[in-house]
Length: 159
Image (cartoon, rainbow, N blue to C red):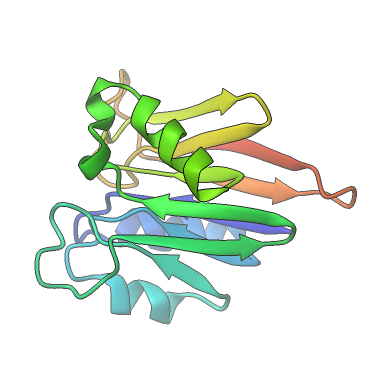
C-alpha cells in the first residue's frame, strides 16, 4: 500500500500535480493542512481516498483541525501541529499521539521535513510541497509504504 503525505501547499498546486503524476497509483492521500482554499481542487486530482486537515492559514475552509484515519492496521492521527507548539519540538505531539492511541502522527506547519521515531511509533512531517524552509529549500513530501508483512516504511522525497 502506498500513501502520499503532503503539507503546506498554500494554494499552490503545481508541485503537487507533478508529484501525483510522478508517483502514479497511490492508495491513500494525507494532507496536514494549509491548503489555503485548494482542497477541492486537490481532491479532484486524486483517484483514491484522502484525509485533509486545516492549518493555521485555512481560516474559512471548514476543514477539520484533526482527523484519525485507519490505514491498514495502523491508526494515523493528522493535525497541522500549530496548536501543539511544534516549533518548540515534538514533545506535545508525541504525548497527544500516545493519549489518542495512534501509531503515527502526521503534522506540517514547520515547512521542514522530518521523521521522528518514538519507539515503534513515528511523527511524520513531510515539510512543504510549495514553500520549503529547510537548508537547500527543496519542496518535499513523504511516501509511506506498507509492505506485504504489514511493516511501514517512510521515505522523504524532494522535487
